Image 1 (cartoon, rainbow, N blue to C red):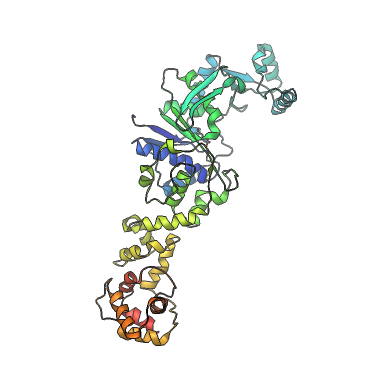
Image 2: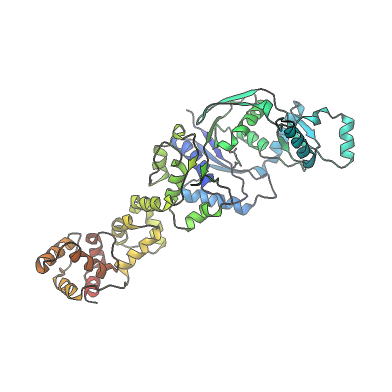
Length: 447
Ligand code: GLU
């Protein structure tokens, strides 16, 4: 395959949620694994609902997931291109003015339904004479513009769904331009896909019907250009089958981040749910990309449970090497020669990244030691080896204690852990003890 060019085209009318992240990730992983380009294209022709703040929010959320676009476009700045495309369609007789009000259209739809007919636009506007149109305009009506579909079957080989066919005779001619002259999503999308030489359109299966329309637009606007390949993936749905809307605040990427879930956990869940690959933790998008294949995506709904993010975050953290988190640790002031050994000791015990602070306090700060068995702890303090300490100190010390006190197992280890860390469980003490150091350990034992 020559280098693919893909695009992620969100409308900046809200923060993106995990379902939008799925689309972005599919596109990103596909392009990255084929050495292609990823375009971020803001679908912001709806000026009333799009904001610059939401657009920036999308960029922040993508960056958090590890996605940095090669290029970013705003459709609101490309309107001249869409005007030119509209002229071309008008000249070819494929774009026609309509004057019906929403109420009139609704009334017609109801009548069609009552007669058992499909609610397809009847093309009444095509029968208007010049005089009719002048009269309507004189009465203050402004036209909206519809694309005249060719009545035939449109076919494509969907990279996820296999052979797809849509009978366009069953579709209404889509409105491309609103009464106020603004463009709906369809024409800008195709115009840009042509202009940006998009090779693969990867998006949710809610766009399958749009694809038939858009393929007709591709043919009308650029009959010579290669049309992109299409892949429509299943949509994420909640555990009880409910769909995700952009306003499902709790599943927005921003709120998942604020709750302490790891980006790679969110990315793994968003990508692997509803595919033949098991949902598993990954260290990086590169790792996630290694097994990514559109052919693995299932045609069944992608049912997911946000609760899985806790375990996935826990497992993700355990996969990180120190170099993966060095900067994030430094931002928490976890720095110096103990930062790396602490990370290695504690990474398997974290439920959120910030949990590392608890273990940092154990080795560097003050804790509330718990003394369950003062007599035993006193003996333990007496047998505490002299420094220098390393990872073998713990076993040398506890085997002396075992011999000295006859204790073993939980009775031996539990009071020590509690006194040294203030916790009943946690990272290996063999790794923690040399980081705590003799002075602190002694003080905690006899505290
Ligand atoms: N703004 C559209 C959406 O988010 C873009 C669809 C497309 O990828 O063409 O659903």
